[in-house]
Length: 397
Image 1 (cartoon, rainbow, N blue to C red):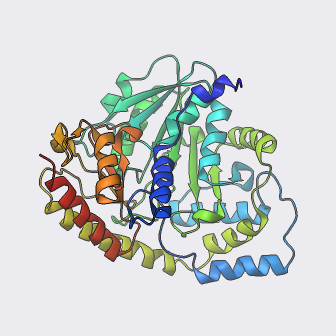
Image 2 (cartoon, one colour):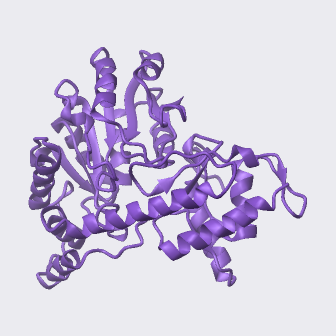
């Protein structure tokens, strides 16, 4: 059987791989603690669910416009004006089946064969693979622990070439939780002003999961706004992962291109999810704020738990719901059965099979000395999982 060579260009997401291995262990009766997936453990707020039920009763059961219902795109524009001080029109918004599709649409609309795409590491696992699918070349820029895993203007400038077409980043960041301040973004903008041919994809899906109280979009800088593509969605801030709804706000030409691409892949997103999204974006944000408060409490608990485990080095994340500790102190140690833990991949598999805790190797995010652990889980499970991790790491010699 000869399948497409396209399949050799990219890898399976490590996050989904760990989730699959975890499900297999659970199916065997193993008491697994899942600290791997990036999914709020909260239910969708009631008022959003009620809007979906009403949409069913109102017979929103037909095909939707490729770019999304007009009133949803208007709601996105209203949200961007209210929360970010940004002016967009509905023609500049495209609604997709999740932010992942929004990212894919964006990359496919911009990147040609051989174009270079700058991605600061650590980065979300799918960025580089979508670039490869488009025939582009990911240029991974290693950031430092010292700078909070955020790219500096000098690092950005050093990696720009005549082939650079796109810059991709997230703030708050998955996997580190890092948030770029207005001053830090301004320094990057100064570099982009010298290179007018580079587009900027700003992934802001974790915007609401922010413990600093301030989110600044790079699109708020007028000199680069017409090159920015904002990625956002409903999954994280509204606990709507399974609803699969994301969107872009972009220059009209980019939005039109994404509409064209999406028309051949999926057409319009789910009709009921779109009706619920209008209510989510324009309705009561108290459930979101309550959820973020819980995430902050859990983050503080996680940082305390990690402080009891020697050898872990980790920033306190200002956003998202992950910690991303450096675990290299445990490399080249032996497990109780004599196996050698050579790297983060080995450590993750040891924790999965011995401690029955699923985490994700930092190699998948471009930082091989780290692992990603999610605190999108109950406090009870977090404490249980970290105690199992502590005991398992203490057993290495």
